[in-house]
Amino acid sequence: MVVASTNPLKRSKKTKAVGVPTIDLSLIHKDRSTLIDLIVEACEDFGIFKVINHGVSSDVISSLERQGLDFFAKPTPEKHRAVGPTVPKPFGYGFRNIGSNGDVGDLEYLLLHANISSTHPPLFSDAVNDYVEAVSDLSCSLLDLMAEGLWVQDKSIFSRLIRDSQSDSLLRLNHYPALKNWDSFINGERIGFGEHSDPQILTILRSNDIAGLQICTPDGLWLPVQPDPNAFYVMVGDALQVLTNGRFGSVKHRAMANSSISKARMSMIYFGAPPLNATISPIKEMVSPLNPSLYKPFTWGEYKRAMHASRLSDCRLNQFKRRNDQ
Ligand SMILES: C=C1C[C@]23C[C@@]1(O)CC[C@H]2[C@@]12CC[C@H](O)[C@@](C)(C(=O)O1)[C@H]2[C@@H]3C(=O)O
Ligand SMILES: O=C(O)CCC(=O)C(=O)O
Ligand SMILES: [Fe+2]
Image (tube, rainbow, N blue to C red):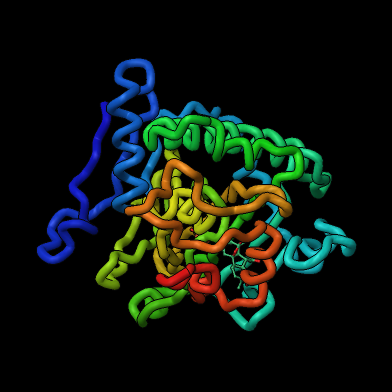
């Protein structure tokens, strides 16, 4: 069954129903064209959707989850040691500091390269490799369906960037501590991971059953996203926004860290990215005299430099927007 909930972003003036659309991937066998339409609509209207019946084995998910929880339960010096001293920034274990420009959050995390050929901390390697393989396959299937829905001639035009052996994809495990007491639950907002859009092509997020993720509506309202350990949330990244010439929009989101006093939230996030030397510019089917290109071409490496020079909440795409007269 496909459930596409009412679109709160379109109806936000008289918002009643809230919730991101749910896409049932098993529909691919029954009604492929409806499935494709729902995916395209979700990317256009929300930049995020939930995928159920995604086909990723629960063993693969639970094995990474178990290793992640075991890892975060270790004493801090061990967590630093486990990843190894040679891992270049921003990779490895981090606590509170996000990026290198002063952003802080109420979390600890592990950031790893998700390229097939990259090496991972020994205690993680099988679980990471199996998980990355499964979620990158899922990303590629979704990207192929998106290309089909956009009537793009080359159906692999997006997924090829992620499948490339030099792809710059990442895997991140975020661990938001449980609150210590009811006082901190009642007393105000605690931002775990501040507002931002993901820079890459596609994000595949899975969390345990503790809430925290929120998305921002066009009128600036923060909408909580229900946690669902059996599903994945898929988010459009900045690079896909550019490739589709703005037809799909990357979604501004954040994670709160005040949902539970008994259990920590842990999210496992795959960011599907192109190789550093890939050029990112609107694909030809998305550009016409009536729909001129909104962005100047850039390489993913250039975008990454802009991203690492920016704060988490900055709108990095602005630097690459064409002026109307160009
Ligand atoms: C503050 C920062 C952290 C970040 C790099 C940046 O300078 C701006 C983008 C941030 C972000 C957000 C999504 C992902 O979690 C991330 C890995 C990414 O690709 O862009 C992080 C970066 C990071 O933690 O290094
Ligand atoms: O941990 C989460 O739920 C979201 C974090 C996030 O958006 C990110 O790491 O890019
Ligand atoms: Fe994010």
